[in-house]
Amino acid sequence: MPKSKYHTIYKDLKSKIEIGDYAYQELLPSEHTLVQTYDCSRNTVRRAIQELVKDGYVQTMQGKGVRCIFLPAEQASYTIGGIESFRESSIRNHRNGTTKVLCFVEITADEKITKRTGFPVGTELYYLQRLHYLDGIPLIINHNYFLKSAVPGLTPEIAKQSIYEYLEDTLHMTIVNSKRIMTVEKITQIDEKYLHINADDYNCMAVISSQTFNSDGVMFEFTQSRHRPDYFRFQDNAVRKAPK
Image 1 (cartoon, helix red, strand yellow):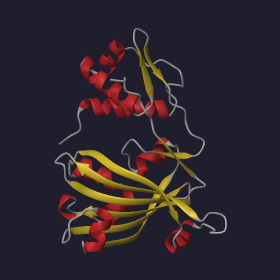
Image 2: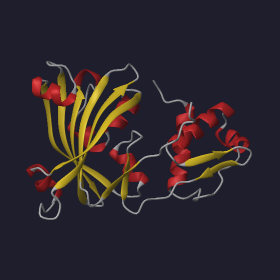
Image 3: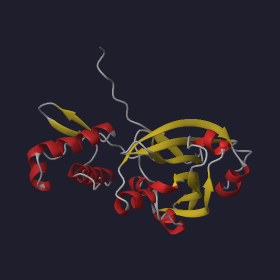
């Protein structure tokens, strides 16, 4: 189903914060001004602001407004708490991101794949290896498993651009949540080959494994994302809940 209007407002405000239209510690326009600007209800604006709060971009202050607390990172940073595509992360980091598809095949999950991904034995999948570049430097290898029935029409050309854009804009899938595990693992021969890493300097990789679900509660993706440790840092925004 199409994205709600609050999400459009959220993405627009998020983009303006990232490019510096709203500087660190600056107050965002008032709620009344945002309602007029986006021609929407107060509840819609508030929901968009709530999403920015969860992502660590702004902080609400009762009686004072909404303050920008976003600071750009010197290194390219990827979020742990949010779900964003490589293209979205590249834009947020003000970098030129490109993708090369190394492998694109159709497979059937066996016991080994099931143990690794969580897809049941016999599930028809797309398996992809993709190499992501930032400013021409190869920095990430993604091993992607996509549920074939949930991603009809997937092609290497789409995978080279943005699979999430295809899922949301063409297939109208709503991506809801992602379960993630972060580990540090030994560098493999594939890592050395494509990421141009000298094992004498770095013998480990930062690895994010994720199972991602749509609005029907169906796991449509398992991805292992392997990152060069000398270029990337991972960020999150934690909110303390009031003690019970």
